[in-house]
Length: 238
Ligand SMILES: *[C@@H]1O[C@H](CO)[C@@H](O)[C@H](O)[C@H]1NC(C)=O
Ligand SMILES: *[C@@H]1O[C@H](CO)[C@@H](O)[C@H](O)[C@H]1NC(C)=O
Ligand SMILES: *[C@@H]1O[C@H](CO)[C@@H](O)[C@H](O)[C@H]1NC(C)=O
Image 1 (tube, rainbow, N blue to C red):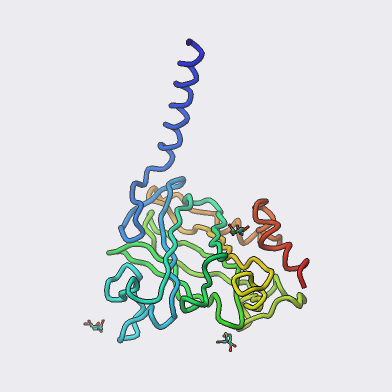
Image 2: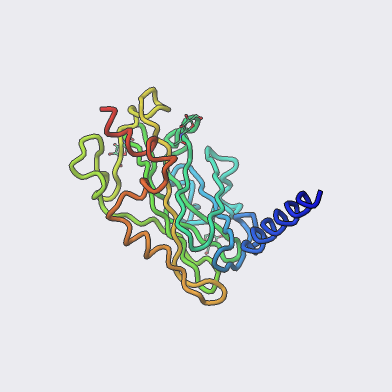
């Protein structure tokens, strides 16, 4: 009995620690928040045709803005909650979801009054699919200011005949090689997320600099559960 109660106390302490490290209670991507290092931060990624992300004025709106009316258009939404200032690899499994069937572009977004949204990034069409992305979330005093896609040219795929380099910035695979198009490659999307700027205590967020320094290595190798599915397969298959 005594040992059982000790175990219970220990577990409660561990749970207490876990909740103490994430003090951000905002779980909706369409609500404003101010974060500190080790909080969770919720943001969304919306998939649609690139012209659905702007209105008649050609101004670029957040998917949280009702004027875009994305829920009534051909679109899909994914939500993520990485930890502030940690490098995370987010994945979107495409075994039952073909990005090209939903317009082929994506934007990352969060916030309402302080809404921020990335530019649309090409993901897939009937010819090509891009599977690897780097997204930087930039904060100022803990408020999201900006989301942007970072590209490093086509260094990762230059000289690899399984890939084509699109617009001198994205390594892409032929869509008909993807499993969701009767091919053999798992074209799940991998989104490397990193943070820059300052948190609400003005501590600086450094994970973006770490990603930049690590770039010379294949970051996917760090995520052992994905190693086989996202990278190795390209070389095996063709
Ligand atoms: C176009 O822009 C004007 C001025 O910013 C704004 O008042 C109007 O509501 C916008 N139109 C649409 C369809 O959003
Ligand atoms: C995606 O889901 C399928 C089916 O559940 C699974 O076989 C595959 O390994 C998953 N891919 C990744 C990258 O997790
Ligand atoms: C897909 O996109 C690429 C790059 O923008 C373009 O060259 C190609 O024609 C497109 N294919 C289709 C079927 O839309």
